[in-house]
Length: 507
Image 1 (cartoon, rainbow, N blue to C red):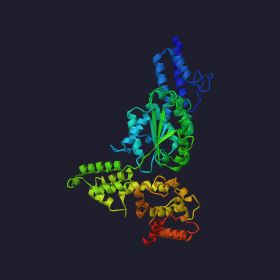
Image 2 (image 1 turned 90 degrees about the horizontal axis):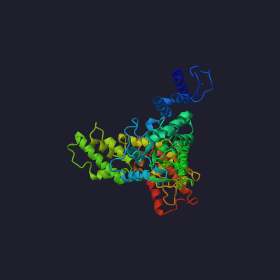
Image 3 (image 1 turned 60 degrees about the horizontal axis):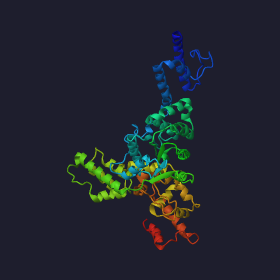
Image 4 (image 1 turned 180 degrees about the vertical axis):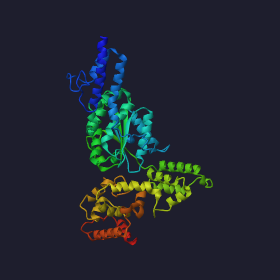
């Protein structure tokens, strides 16, 4: 018997090599002498001979099983988009909530994630620059400290890999396998059995890599998954598929998963959430304006700059003055993107903070590096929409008047509903009322956006203050008044008529 065991030892090693070939795409080699490919019996899965041989050799068997339990994880490893994970070095420094800001919202999310009776999905939405990513990054850190973060994915528009949905669920499955020990073996075995899953459809990846293994989870705590910037994933169809796949999962209450999805309130995303079949399956939170949090942030950051910059020793505190602080707070419209951009500009160690702040306060004429980050945000959103040549005249009208989409249709002689279609992709920087009867006029949640549109250097091809654009708008209004008796859309009150006529006197 010992002789037989010695003679079978090389065969066991050969079987392991055969299993490795199977993982790489082969379907297993022949039984018996695997080193002589194509010779021998039909055999079976390479794992079989290993277990049969080592059944009495405890140490060796355990070692082989440990190696095999990791093979699926190793395959999954090469499909992971590590830069999309919340604490990735590539995306450092990550945006995070300033201490003592967004506290109520963060506490609510934290409690929701721990509540066994809470809804499976939560949608955090808000306009561009409202601070959604900062909230999600901060929340991810807290949930990880509590041991209930299953995984995260932070999309980034235009990124070679973070901008694509194909790596989303493989990345989340990998994080789940590492964060939850009881899920590591089930996830690994599924991938090992069928490595092609990591390139499967979005729905297949979700069902096989996440849903199926999670049915073996037996702990009491729920596992939370964070997906930030869904609207930045490449392709609206892909965004819809991801969202539908996650929402469909909410019908299975036996799963231990919780999802928080953050995005801009783009129409195609809101339309999915508004479908009757899903309307009761999720909770939602609007990242509303927070002047108080912005004020606290500006106060603390300006105080820090005053302490740290050597040139500020002779500048009396508090700096800046309350009226300047109030002006900046008002210009922010209660959103952090404006305040953070200003602080980043003033906090440049190569310049005097007083001089940098003076540049910010000087107005919007000329080149302003202070607004580079903000301008890039606006240009990205504007540049992502189709029919941009038709968009600029509409922006010119919105920048000068309070108008509804119906009035824009009449002003430019569009077919009914055309203005809504043209503005459809701008919901993150413009508020286009879905119920005009309640609030009819189009508005900008960021006061700085209108300043951007009226600055030629900043807005470039989206500049609305050129003589040509203004004259075109004037002709459109004159033509509209000529048609007034046939289509009296502007007959609301005399004050509104006067506001339009005042337009001509400012030229």
